Image 1: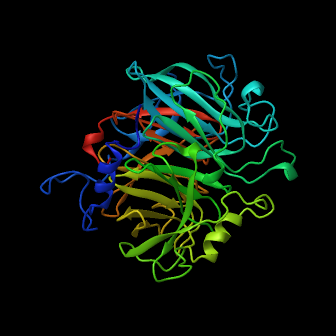
Image 2 (image 1 turned 90 degrees about the vertical axis):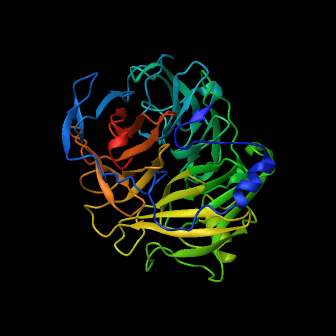
Length: 448
């Protein structure tokens, strides 16, 4: 399976160790994978209202020359006869053995009844209705030929991340459990095979922590999983499995700390471009029994050992041996930050602030983040006014790529941005009313 958010080059474990230990650059701002002589425009031009190819609806604004299809709307009947659940969120795209695109999509649902993702025979917990759906997309028409429920009975599946072995990590943004009336405890990560053709029976990976999970990104050479937490305060976590690719086989959960600066607070008074030496502290109990009453129980363990504090960590992706992640309302203006972590060894690395928003019209509450094969970054906004997809250049320049103009839902968030394995199609959701878009055009002509 190939995933869209990164180009995985997975060799032997020993070769992976060697690659990880090598320096990945000087930290200077340089263009993504291009020659020094190449000069590329920042954006793609003025955004204009654009009708979808397949329905004619004007749902988004795009630069001239870009097109899109819309599908997977809430309530539409899927191939398995079930209605499409609501609250579309994080996604990843995989290529299957037949050359089709398999799009695994979260549904951030915290209730049961109409609009839920529930298949009682396979449900982890039949008292809640979150989960995932899988859409099989024709790469030529960019339209689904099949769609079905693939994970059932989980709670508030917000974001997640793809793995190099062809699975989707679906993360619960909650620590609700029995005290809240549910049959099971929640706040975990679940693994869903992109090759599955129906609902999977998936066990919670409890050693990956019980907290308000958001997104995940896998470093392919080690299979370390980086995890974000959507709280304020919160931490950045890393799960080290005992065996490459076997997340259910146990491992160690850690939290990022800044070397020589106990309980470093990244939320304010940070300088773009400054590099901070980082290390990892071990979380003693990743599945604390008091997590429902104290959602910060895991964070507090890390903080007691000197871990660093962030504000609402959400999007996370792997790009060129580095982990990119967003702080939705971090920064002096409280409008958002984009961070980069570069591992330099198994135990240490470098943390750098790539961007901090100072104006609402630059970037307003960055949420999901995705990268393509060329290294471009696309950010989903979850702000309070006009909602955009923004592109971010390595030199710190932000540009508008798309705007939500869905009638009656113009202020609803973009979610789940992810590129197809060949990098030619950007898939993204408008969470409410719940729909999925496939966008394509001349990516080479601009900042992505």
